[in-house]
Length: 143
Image 1: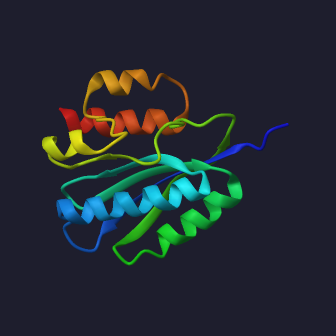
Image 2: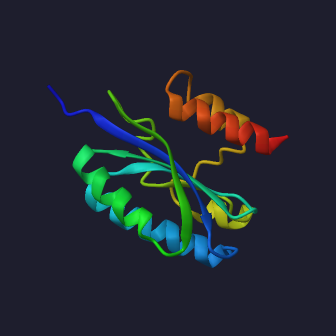
Image 3: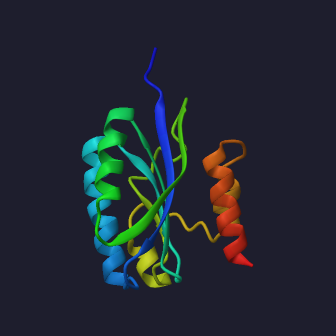
């Protein structure tokens, strides 16, 4: 029987406004760590300094990943919204999806999926709590 996939969704606040370069640095670092540890997920940064992230993977790998995230000095008020086990990954092809860069930078990032696009959100399907939470966050921000 395969091991369950652990999924964690959290929010946090940046200690200072993030520039495009700051976001790229975070994204590139996350993708490197995630690839080595078999972690997938999604990261969003809102202009008000709020991060929203979903990470998923092997429970032990996710424990280490989340510990590293919570210790990162670039953010504070890390609040876990969801910590659950699932049968399958919600973001199997995303080493780390991301939202908040300018349009020309977005198109240059391999594997980027724009969740401001309603078609991308509808492609995620229905059901899992993390997907419903992401949809509610991005549908609200789109209006």
